[in-house]
Image (cartoon, rainbow, N blue to C red; front, side, top):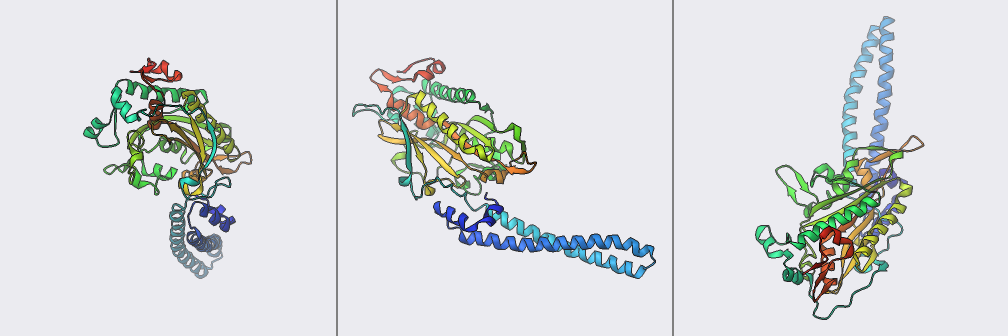
Length: 423
């Protein structure tokens, strides 16, 4: 969440940046500042009462010693009165602090200056392109037909066992899934990321820590009996490793990667773009997560983008990078870059990765800090990116590499699959 310190320093700037995301923050920012003014007045009164109590406590013994019992008893009565008043003030102070926190949780992150203005995906900026778009015959098959033809993904069986959006991967399809996961993990390891295998469900505090709650509870699968949530991405448990942690500056950056299945309800998703692997309720993904000093986070963001680009180049997939406009960004992000690959049979771009810098927004929720050379506590910057999400990668690999003989497996995956063609 935004820091109260930054809001107080320049509320008009905060309001103007929130507007880039299409969020009208004037009323809520004004209300936060009003409550903070009340909070500071209460704190000042509490501090004054504490000083008065200390003075009275010191005087009572001296009065008793001097035989001034009546004055000492009067001082004791005043102490009792102040303590009762202080309890009321402390309750009011706690209420103010809770109200401010609850309001701050409803305010999205402010986009950084590099974020373009705009309201929809049409306003995103193509920043970079790479790879060669394959030329396929007009009768090229979309991936869902290829999956049925070669018996590698069974969508109907998934519907029978669970429901739409939960496919079975079969035979070479299952091996291709495992190959991609292992390839992505190995590449992350080579890039200096420490692999972790996290829990695949998280508690409410973790959801609040990374910003899925209260923004995205409608998109998450909730285990009601235990009040746990199935993770929508490994970002959630991995970033929460550092919740309530003070990291020694010498240990920064923290670089982690993790494989996990991911669950998303995808409520409200309809139409042709959800067919096959284009939009699932359960899918596999490898995530990279970094915790950085603020002055290093944007260089880290570039490294993460280059890492994802390298994966797509090795897979031989044509790609482009989009710098998202304010209206198309997530609630928590300060800046996001989406990677899309070309789907040759569908003739459209498919999103396969988002790489984001959250600056201090998540860290403030998490209380993820480091102690600097100045001996003071500072909020870290957190970043994450998909490296990569599997479903649309598989869709593009199947469609772009189809031949009359079968589907050619990229060279980088063959040592994992044990075969070079799906036939």
